[in-house]
Length: 339
Ligand code: DAH
Image (cartoon, rainbow, N blue to C red; front, top):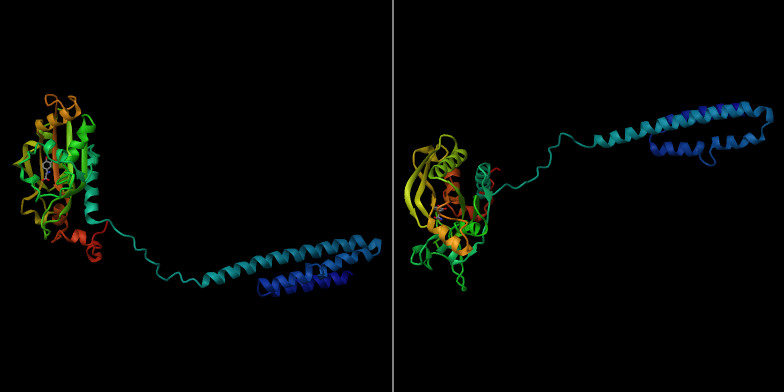
């Protein structure tokens, strides 16, 4: 029995070492420790031994079993890590990765976000209003009389019920003042519509950005400081901003804003970019009447407003020659704007 066990140990350790892969090793294991394996059978033979031989042979059997089990475990670990390495060797780590085509923001959206971000830093919050507006919100409340050319049927799109597609985002000024009380500091980007012939510089739907600041003691100095800061942040610190007297029905005094900067076509020309002014007290009067209170008492509060078109700004900033490119969705155009 003793020789048999020693031989068994020798054979087992040799077979284990020789097993070339995990399935060969499994066969070896079954042949040794399986139900009718050699080691299992050796264990069963213990019963037939003389009583006095049992302790010694039992000890040897235990040693053999321990050695064989340890060898099986070690070889299993060795072979499975070899299998894993072989699998990894089939992966070519030098192969270039698959590029994911992540889209980019539309240039107008990109510019709008930049603009909003600058105004947010100055405490302006986003506001919005409907694209389909009443004449009152779009014109009357903005001190624009019925005979004003902007109200001509040829100038915007009217719905059968008399409502219209807003011709400017200035209607959001009215929507905001109807529902809130000073201090108000809002920025309102959004679509505006006009019945223009579509050409290289006109679209029937375009994008504007409106601003309104109403509080006690708001001055023309605040207006100039705010917009100068905005344009310098947007175009660079070399940007020069000029306020040229103009007329808008809803502001008094009113200005057009001209800007020149290296970022804007070399900075040689003054470019007209926005309209602005101090909110006309007649606008506050309309709001108070509609609200039925004196929340916008012209003797207590003053305000400034401004508005500009994003397409025009983007065309100059990015050198886009035709406004229609913004709506054609041509990948060759859009993919030129990283964001
Ligand atoms: N709504 C004007 C337009 O569409 C732009 C404008 C001018 C907005 C002066 C304003 C403003 O808020 O104060 O041409």
